[in-house]
Image (cartoon, rainbow, N blue to C red; front, top):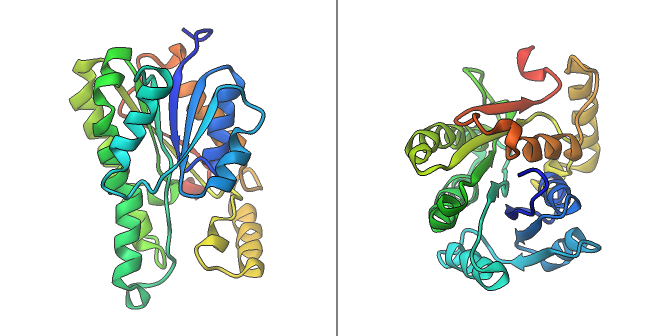
Length: 251
């Protein structure tokens, strides 16, 4: 199976981890549909890859799941071997600072959208004996708190529960469901969420010093685990989340 071409969907593929994941699959010859909101970054992601395609769509739009499924059907007959639910949004702030828009946006992108998109491609995934990969966060593991980022953390903890639950529900249909929980990865997320660049740089430096391996991670290091988890060597792995954080969550 490792040498066969797979049909892959990656959400949030215009930047950061999503871009690295999409390129990792495309680089091994897979057909990849890269989904995101902004055409420009998506075009950069697929540039140079023969069978990587961009689809600009807001995954929180009620019509988005059908649009993604229709695009796959048009591109390669509806086959889906791998779905990577990577798209996410964050809004830093304590409970007293958050507004309804910020809360609802995080729940919509990080939790509702993965559920509805996965549902939309269940048939093709079952036909292929496919794999769903949910990208969570090492910051939302276990019983640790995440003050200042509680709603984002709650959505990622919820996504981990979906991973475990779907693994049980979908295992009899031949679908595996796994999670990957990145630690601190320099993707620019903090700046996009409103953090000043200087503050974000300071955050990365401080977290690198706290991490047992002495640095922050790269998007490519996360992408390698995503690709490995959908391969034949992981064929008996489901319902678990692999932590890729340099040991930070252990401290």
